[in-house]
Length: 246
Ligand SMILES: Nc1nc2c(ncn2[C@@H]2O[C@H](COP(=O)(O)OP(=O)(O)OP(=O)(O)O)[C@@H](O)[C@H]2O)c(=O)[nH]1
Ligand SMILES: [Mg+2]
Image 1 (cartoon, protein in one colour):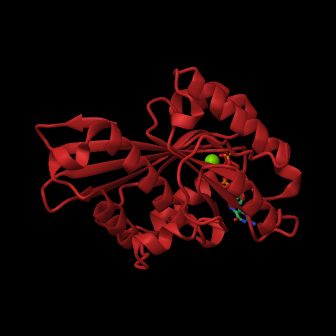
Image 2 (cartoon, rainbow, N blue to C red; image 1 turned 60 degrees about the horizontal axis):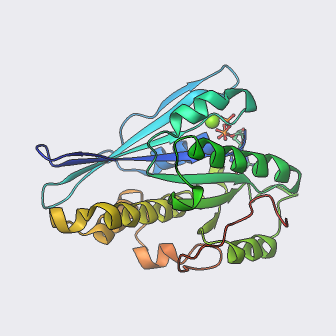
């Protein structure tokens, strides 16, 4: 997080992490498509000819509160291919919140688990415990025939503490819900640490709810948060196992 008191500007960094081809870039494209023109900046992608992320994607989103505080969200994706490990480590530096995009296909279980360990290691390299990072998990590619069952995902979600969302990013389904879940969790973690709401007379939940509207979802913040697989739950110290039953 960066805070410029003079300009009354807050910058929050969110990172989409996960195995290769799980749909991280597709999530950003869907967010970009959903956002209104005032909110979204240009989506920057650095990829190869075959659309694999080479360095990262970046979607800037901006919001100005009635109190005059402006919030800039920088939403990044990491490149999922194993060879890009050092780039992932660089991109995740300074992240305020992480969305882990898992591939729902049963055959991708190991790839999900490896990417989750890789995230944990890259955070540990910055002396951050995974449990301290605001995190949501999205199971994407729900449309594919060998997708893990919802019951199994719900069972995993109940064992963990992170909100878990289902998505078909190519159709934009679940994309805004996942993002709002991440933003809500990240905001509250930053607010607890820095008392931002109090310092700036800023209503964090109103901000997150407004962002949902700017992304085309007017169902209300509570309703969106309830869309997580096992509902909205309290923080505890249990860890989620993205790799399945371990
Ligand atoms: N069927 C289906 N395909 C999807 C879905 N989401 C993404 N894809 C496809 O999966 C492929 C990979 O998507 P990307 O968004 O590029 O994946 P990525 O996670 O950014 O991959 P890397 O940049 O290599 O890490 C593309 O062909 C997408 O169109 C989905 O929900 N369902
Ligand atoms: Mg990508």
